[in-house]
Amino acid sequence: MAEAAGNTGAHGLDVQTGLSHIHASHHGRPASWVAVAIIVVGFVVGGSALVAGPAWWLFWTGAAIVVIGGIFAASIRIFEDWY
Image (tube, rainbow, N blue to C red):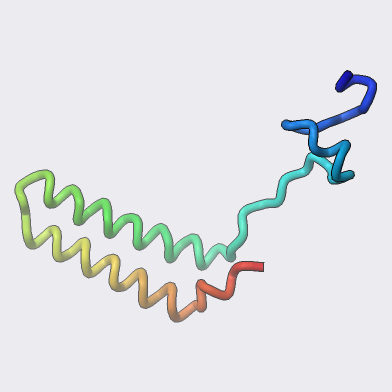
């Protein structure tokens, strides 16, 4: 039946809605992705410090990285990336 209707996409909804099977790309600018990567690195550093010790100096270093990433994210207006 799908062959008779044409390309029906993953769930057969393309025939009903008339939309193509092309998916939208990820939103955000490259600077926003860099800010998110900085924040993730901070969480990984802080979490690793808690597992391996706890090494409090490394935990607070990770927390500082998260704060720096948050300040960077706010400065580039990351919340305005959604289109």
